[in-house]
Image 1 (spheres, rainbow, N blue to C red):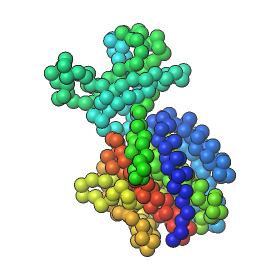
Image 2: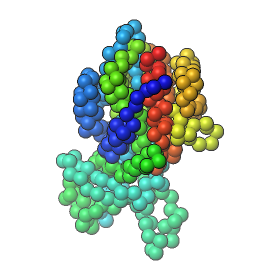
Image 3: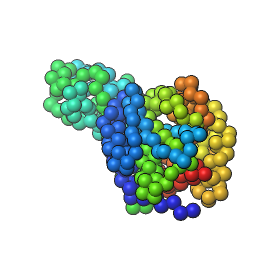
Image 4: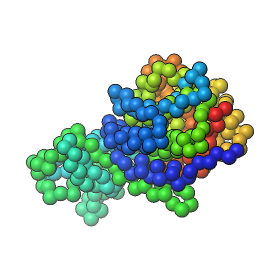
Length: 345
C-alpha cells in the first residue's frame, strides 16, 4: 500500500485550524479559510444556510454518494453578565472540562469585532487571601474572567463595548512536537478536518477519483448537538470523522484510527463498520474497535434529523478529550489511509 500523504501539509493545516477561533455559532470566518483551501485545490465548495460547508469530489459513479463529516466548531464560552467590580461571568458552549479553564488565557470579542484579552480565574484566586483557594469548586458559578483593561466597575466594562452574548475564545496553546505529537485544545475535531483537507490534497495531487461521488460535510454546530442534522439529500451513507476516545475499558491509543461500533446513539451500521474493520486489518493499519457510551457524533445527529442513511464513525485517537488534548500524527495518518481505502474500494 503506497498512499502518498503529504505529512507537512496535513500538520500545517491542522496547526492553522487549531489556532483559529471557531466555537459553535462563530464559524463563518474559519469557513472562509476552508473555502479558500478548497478552491485552490479545484473543488466545489457550497455553504448551507446554517453555515456548514459541502465539498464535492466527483466519483466514477453516482450510484451512491458517500458523505464524510467532520466538525470545525469547538468548545467555547460567552459573556453571561458583568459584575459590579468589572469582571465577567460566563456561560459555556459545549462541554469543556471547566476546571481545566482555571488560569487559562482567553480573548473576548465584541459585536463590533474588537478583541480584548483576559484570564479565566476562580473567584478565590489567591492562596494568600482566600482559605478556599484550593478547595473551591471550579465551575461557572465560582469562576470569572479577569479583563486586561483598567476596569473597576460594570460601567467601565460596558464602555469598552463588552456586553452579554459576546464570545469568549479559549487559548488553544497549540504545539506540534518533533516526535509527532499534536497537543492543543480542540483537536476534537480539527485534527479530523485536517485529515479531510489532506485527503482532498492527495486526491488532487495524485489525480485520484473515488469509486463513488463523495461529499465532505464540514459541520459547525456539532458540539451543541445538531451539526449534521441536515446533510445533502443525495448522501446515501455518512462516515463521521471524529476523535477516538482513550481511557479505561477502551483499546484506542494516540497512534490508532478508532472505529466505533456503538455510542450513545446506538450501534452504527454493521456492514459499513465491518468493511472498515476488514480494510484496516487487511492493510495492517493501527486501529481499534471500541464502544463509547458517553459520546455522540454527526452521524447520530443526521439520523435523528431524519436522514435516510447508513452511518459509521471513525477518527484519530485523542487523549484527554475536552481538556488539554493530545494525539499523534500516526493516528491522523491511519485515519486518512482508512478513508482512502474505503473511498477507492
